[in-house]
Amino acid sequence: MTDALKRLSDEGVAIWLDDLSRKRITSGNLAELIDQQHVVGVTTNPTIFQKAISQGDGYDRQLSDLAARKVTVEEAIRMITTADVRDAADILRPVFEATDGQDGRVSIEVDPRLAHNTKATVAEARQLAWLVDRPNTLIKIPATQAGLPAIAETIGNGISVNVTLIFSLERYRAVMDAYLTGLEKAKERGLDLSKIRSVASFFVSRVDTEIDRRIDEMGTAEAKALRGKAGVANARLAYEAYEEVFASDRWNALEKAGANKQRPLWASTGVKDKAYKDTMYVEELVAPNTVNTMPEATLDATDDHGEIRGDAVRGTYEQARADLDALERIGISYDDVVQLLEDEGVEKFESSWNDLLKSTEAELERLAPTEG
Image (cartoon, rainbow, N blue to C red; front, top):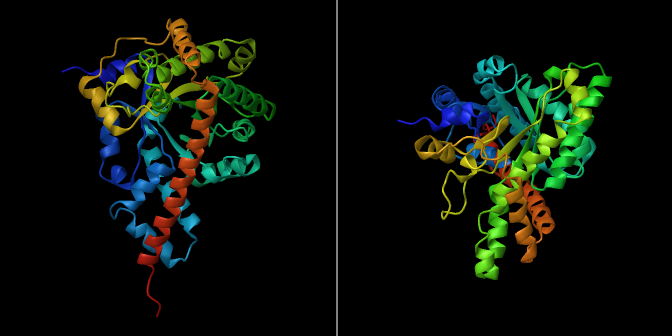
């Protein structure tokens, strides 16, 4: 028996599960994953909750109570999702305490329809932090242009943040700048910087999916030789940027005041193309002080046949730059791809949120008490 997940954890990669449901909580499955598969955190998004609530009867009792109270569908969603996050946070609390707050975290996302509204995002982040009311929560804010000042202000309020939907290196640097700005605000306000945590979710597989699609349209041998290289190269260069920013004088001053580094989090790590090894985005992105949030299928695949060969990121930057440069030379615009992916990411989460509204509304109507 090999223990690839333990080796991954020993290399400094925190293993988080990219999924949550009421059934996973009540069945003991989440506790089992923590105990047996080195899971030390959970991420959620509107798509995950839409799937969870639309399947099975795990939410019927709460939905029935909410229907009896005649709450709005949006309030019902918030009550349901924050309950799941609160319960998951309680299950992960021992991990949170054992790691001095670094892990044992559960993420919940602001309403994706607010992605381009800074003030509303800040207000929503405060509301979610209050509703969940657990110190091991991370509020997910998308890294849109309007999201950047919202991230800085939310961190400045002492609320820990998971910055999501990062695709480009330029935007990632802006995210790190927003984090440092937020810490500086928190320091000015007299808050304890050591209590504030953040991760920056850099998306991986979606980059390959879009670039590989364009490569396949070209159909040339030169183009096909670059299939499956962009996602990993992009993430590795993100880690280079992380090393640079968190060695700066600006960061050092904050660290002396008790601040914690914002860890890179590899998201979208489920392999979409069956031509690639299903653990590719785990094995090729091993680096200290990172997080890899995995769908359960990727977690199981890594456990079963993952090959963890130590640090796979540092020392690869020159090749990573060469891979991205080669794509530009054959006519695939990096800037165009990453902007498209950000726009699509926001749209997908909005669509999932709207589906969640519709399915929850239907459930409230089904379970509404008869009058009289």
